[in-house]
Image (cartoon, rainbow over all chains, first blue to last red; front, side, top):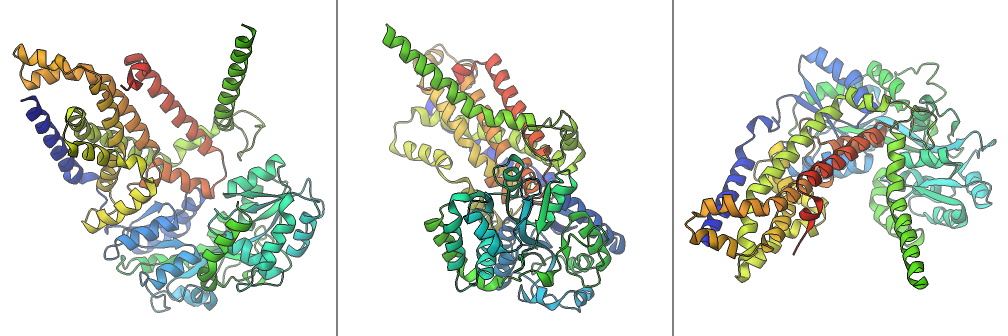
Length: 349
Length: 266
């Protein structure tokens, strides 16, 4: 009899749990589809998206937009799992994931008919994601250094490698755990040292020369800590992030775009197929010159609308995209796994 | 005698070094949360509570905190509703399939959380639940259930079956036996399971990550997104508050039930 009671308890518990889980929280269930759901990274990014893009979109259309915080792999997985009813209407993406999504047929084509402001975006940015999205914001990965310990920073990748290999500096490089390392470091340095997407030997040879004087960062905050603690004196990092640190009080930091051109690390926007059509109105605001100018002022990063005029403060900080090395994102995506494998075997960090 | 003193000394030094190694990074995070600087660096240049204030100024932190609290409580309750009856049955069951069911229910402990999150996203989307709070509750319950199951089973197995049999012989109904005999005896196991379950859900990132939306982002998801693009020490302040919450929960649990009793497994 006791056994029967426990069995009943087990059964009723499981049933109650299932019932509660499936239907007990209707008010908390995400109401998909009603407001436009756009995406942003956390912190200052989110505030900039709200102020520069969401506010004008809401003012012009009278619609509301909610902002989902997170990251591109998360949003892409959500769209892949729900292609008929995507939970996000506008995606902020890294170029490699944007290409993956575009090739999978998950994203809509960007045209001037749908997005009038697209006419002011250089075609190369739309072509880089095969027309299913475009780049609206970018950073350049160059040489960030501690001005208190590096009086004369290297002016080029080649000089950087020579002086680090000679033991003049300890350098902090992004580890392979960081998503864009294949672009900002492997391809950029290989290209600068005479190789390219088909030949990254110059990069691996350079790391082998520098290996005794290197530390690696797993996330951008690690890099800052390496420089702040004196563990490294310089390294490969982004211009915008460097200036953000500078504005927050780390005035000992400096940035140089190497002579060969640091890699352009783009942020693309895309609209999933079947997403809310209001997304086009929002995306048009994202590509608007005035809104992008405001966004650049907050973020310290370059934007892509050709009509944007940077302020006197921002102008010397922004690396024009023409002075950066434009990565062949599509080809890099094809060989990325080989590079990661080689990195793991030869560098291991 | 001298050899034993030396052994004790070496052991003492080892234990002290071990605790320093374990606790020093946490202590540094706590200290950085009180920094007056705009960036995370150690040693800190001065003392300030501004980063704790920042937590309450930044609305996504507050929204995510509420989601995390609600989710952890609901997932813990559901884990108890499902896990306690299951434990009571499986702890004494002799059938071979009971062992298989027990292993199945405990299997989330041995699976990578990111696999559970990714697979759940696709499965729940296929059956129409999609990215929602309901989906979060289901996946968190799956993840939390083993903690309740394990602790309650361990405590229940340590109780001789004769206690319940005596109650039944003396005329108590199954429900009265459960309420008056079994429940008081397994209470420490339930408390321990609830504590672990709540903290597991509250800190979970890999599963919650796949179900994040403007309405369902949990605190760890927002913290990760914030940390990748913001450099101020508010994450350290938030970590300090989370640490206080965990320590506070353990102290309360110790005062009410005793940590020792809660962790005894026979």
